[in-house]
Length: 119
Image (cartoon, rainbow, N blue to C red; front, side):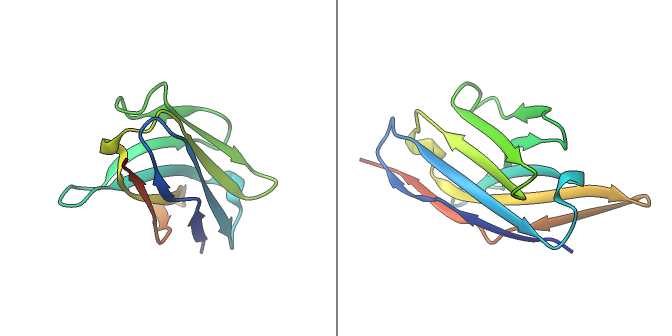
């Protein structure tokens, strides 16, 4: 079992920056692939960025070059640094932990944190 708590969301002007954090507890954090997803009103939840247990990362095309995902296994925390924010980045951002254990995909979601980009 993994518990995830996101923080760092808020209101920011276009072009600004925010850093989201997701603190994990309850299991071996380093074994999980960690991801950030977002869901805007009326839209489906979409992948923003993922980071595998080492340092391999993958990003949605819409955020490449602006967002950076990182993890600190010693602190059981994953981060999302968001720069050059645009109004279309407005959404609830969710943290997800996922791993395969004995052939079963285990995944856990955080409660989400709101990011609003507006002038």
